[in-house]
Length: 237
Image (cartoon, rainbow, N blue to C red; front, top):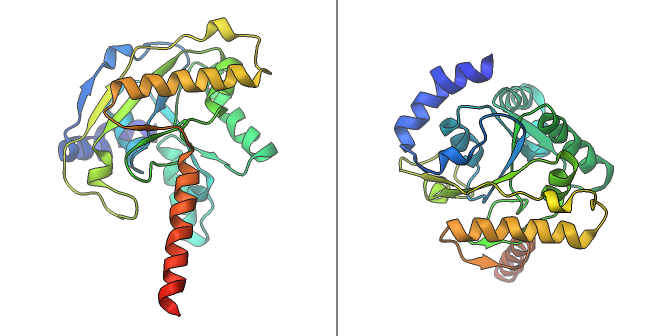
């Protein structure tokens, strides 16, 4: 109930007027049944803007840090993220990550839409990076189609590090659904998981103008942060 109040009467109309999204391929979203919307990730506001153009509710996997803040502010942020359809995703790996994916899997099995970013994190420089195979595991476990989704120019209105977005127009492109039924019952094959993930990334690359880089975005971020730390230490001598 609160989600639809925010979507149609509070935040939704305001954000639609401010960012004036243009949309291509909206008819590629299934009207019924579970599906994964796999998108590129340029800005923290991607998860808030994309659902505005879809009539159905979309649940997103968001990093668990957003849900674990201290004090009253942390509780309010957690409440807000849950209210707008965000599910906490633990990225530490192992059992905690599996539990996070299980929550999303349940939504898919109940016929819902799940939004996920195969890159695992925001692009540090606007390029498209290698996908992680968690999305492939969800595809095979839930047996649902994947709709590629490309966000356009969201990094310009709210780049990494900026607290509030600038006024500007963004775009959203939905590609044709991808069917991976030929891989069902092959959940344990790591080559299959990589093949599915790579096919999703190829689809994203085809409908975007992003340069593709076959490394993980998190590796690039770690390298950049290490270089900045080394430079800061050098300057402090």
